[in-house]
Length: 287
Ligand SMILES: [Fe+2]
Image (cartoon, rainbow, N blue to C red; front, side, top):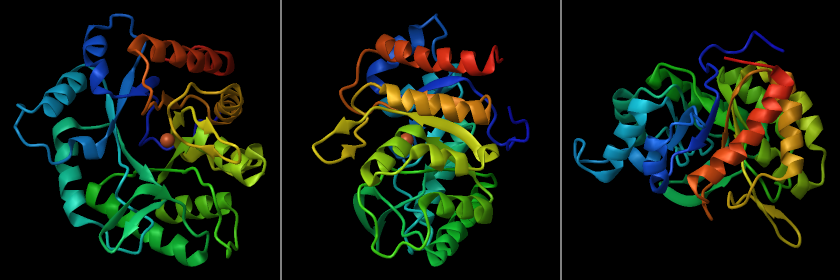
């Protein structure tokens, strides 16, 4: 078990993504099934109302009771556009109001020249793109005055010109930008299934001391590919990868993402119980 992890991302236990439909269950839950919540930053950035809008009221109530972390989906760190200053200003206000334990976004691009693609698009794995995404992450960290986590994304196709492997690219960015990794174990499974390669080699290559958070999720199997839909339970093969990863990482904040076909809160808590069981088998008791 490693003890030299980045201190910017302390162990919070087991979390879920915040869903407004679950609010009453979350606030009345006395079972302590969930330790923290992840919030999609864009859902709460720029909300007006000074506490009067439903979104602000929801987050105010949850943040009073639980630690939260902020997860961005549209900053497009991998595009060659300049860092979106309008976004950063709104994010800083969100951070100021809720004091999230950390902020994360993706190792991807989501558009260019101001056009938004509504998808998390994979990077070209080149030296040039290492430089530009790292520079942008460094600028963001400088503005936020804190390290961020970047998340590995699912991919379905590869660029024709790919001089390095994804894990080599990821390792280089983590080092050059000096940031942390949000390891999405389901994304590792999805991408490696789609490209017909071994996900365990990928996990073996990562700097585990930089992993600050783990995502788990379900997906959809089509005739030819797996699509990262977050609308099903986590499958056994992904639980196996999770066990393998956390054995190397040690205690790391873990959560399940569920964005569609969302079950009742208690069902998600039960699924989170599987992660807790695996973690207790690998780590023993952790406080
Ligand atoms: Fe994820």
